[in-house]
Structures are given as structure tokens and as C-alpha cells.
Picture 1 (cartoon, rainbow, N blue to C red):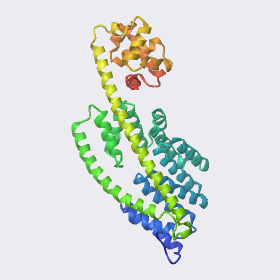
Picture 2 (picture 1 turned 90 degrees about the vertical axis):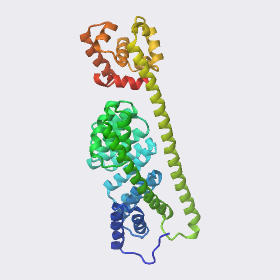
Picture 3 (picture 1 turned 30 degrees about the vertical axis):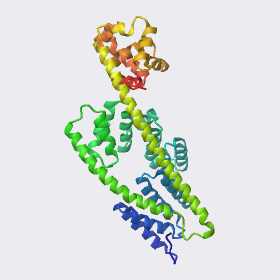
Picture 4 (picture 1 turned 90 degrees about the horizontal axis):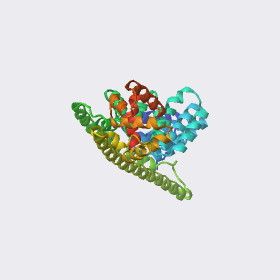
Length: 400
């Protein structure tokens, strides 16, 4: 444990904090953590300073992806900010705690913390951060429609990245690549690079080969730098875990301190296992969705090339058509009925999904070719998208 024989002055504690911040900015988190711990254990009664010290320590844990521990230390910072009487600092600390809950897929507790932050300080300086945290909580809870709601319009690069990821998960490739291409030339966060690389290599069939090659090279360099940085961060986190409680600890309280430390470590392990399991489930889901999309694309190709499309789908008999549509496209007709679409809407949706031009859609229904565009837009509106986005929306529904 870190200890000091003499009680340091306020100026000394302030200097440790400032030096720690400088070292952290220079990429030396372990040395910074040593100074932050000295400041935390100094016995100072400056609540604002202690809040900032714990906040910096929590930031190091966040950068190391130790989110359970980060949330715990942000809670310590929140206690000191609340005691200092600074409502804005306290609200930011609550929002930081909410973000750590969000990335661990604890959406309900994250939203409760956000609501409390807004109750404490319901003014504009906190607004953007709260929106980011709400969007992240929905993303990790796989509530993609809510993510799109909170990220429109994307006020910063982080919200834009969340929007690109969401469209990628929904297989709306054109929208995913649109935002990824905007972010590509102005990346200032290396952690975005993997997501952009994934989107451009999996969702953008027209991506320039040279761009992909260069991005792959940059990604390898950045990944190596991230791994080196993570090693340093983990040393700092270990130091924090060993010295989290003020020293010296009386022997009578040693068992209690050890128990608390073990609980913290258990929470960290649980968080890591949870994140890994969610990643595994996500990978399995992605592989499953990719297989189903390939099957669907083959079905669409066969139907486009069919000389007897009406016979394939039994257009004259809606019940037969509905049954065949559900069979070919994983319950699509039933899904569309549940969303309030009528018989004509569903017929149009299937023809749009197959990829037929307006002329062939008009001949198949039959109806006037001039009215197809209007009918298509009206149908798309019922699904909450534009006519140009209708086919991608239907593709996403057809693989669920």
C-alpha cells in the first residue's frame, strides 16, 4: 500500500494530480496512476480535487476496457463531486457511470443513472454526452431502431460511428458505407478503425481496392499500437486494484478490505466473461445472418430469372401467395401484416424485394406503371422508410 509519514499540503496534492494528468496525456498511465493514488490517499479534504483524481483513475480503467472497475471508481468520483456541491461535475460523473453500465449491456441501470444526471443538472452542457450514452445503451442492448432515433442527426463522430454500426448490423449496406466513408478521412480515434474496416470490406461491394489495402495496413499498425498501450494500461489497473483503499489498513479491517477487493475482482471477471459471451453470440448471429442473406439472394435471383413468376408465387390466390412468401422469405408476409400492411402493400413489397423494375411490377399486379412509384412510396411510409430505402428494409425483415 502507498503511504506517507507526514500529511502533505494541499499544494502538494494538487501538484501530484496535475503531474498525473500530464503523464497520462504522455501515454504513461502507470506513473500517472501512482500519483493519482498518492493524491487519493493524502487525506486532503478538497472534495472537488478528489473527484477529479478518481475520475482520471476511472478513465484509465475505461481505456483498458475494465468497465466494471471503471464504473466503481466513477461512483467514488461522483460521491466527492456531490460533496463538493458542483452539480455539473456530479452529473457528468453519473453519466460516466451510466456509460460503463451501457457497455456491459445493463441498459436499465444506465438509463436510471442518465435520468438522475439530468435531474441534477438539466441544462445543455450535458445534453450531447447524455445522447451518446443513451444511444450506446440501446446499441449494446441490440435495440437498433432506438439507436437510429438517438443518432439523428449525428452531432459528432461518435454518434456517426454508432449510426454506421447500426446500419451494418441491420444489413442496410448503403447507409452503413455512407457514414463509414464520411468518417474514413477524419479518423482521430483508433478504436473506430476496426469498425470502419469491417463495414467497408463487408457492406461496401464497390469499395476501392487500394483504399481497402491502405486501410488494412493502417489497421495492423494501429492494432499493434493499441496492444502496446493496453499492456501499459493494464499495469496501471493492477496498481489501482492493489491500492484502491486508503493506507494504512488496520489489521482488524484487513479481512473486510480483502473481501471487498475480491468482490471487485469478481465483478471485473464477470464483466469480461459477459462481454466475451456477447461477442461470441454476435459473431454467431452475424454468421447466421450472412448465410440466410446468401440463401435469400439465391432465391431472389431464381425468381427474377423465372419464366413463370406468377405461378411460382400463385399471385391469383392471396392465401397461397402469403404461404409461399412466408416459406421463401422467413415469414415476411406475416411480419408485414403485423406491421399494418394490406394485401396490395404486401404484393408490392415482394415484387420490390425480388428486384423487378416498375414495368414488370405493373404487369404482374396488374396496374398502371405510372402508379407503381406512388404505391411504393406509400407502402414504404408505412414501414417508416423512404421509397429508395424500401428494398433494404425488406431484406432486413426477410432474414430475421
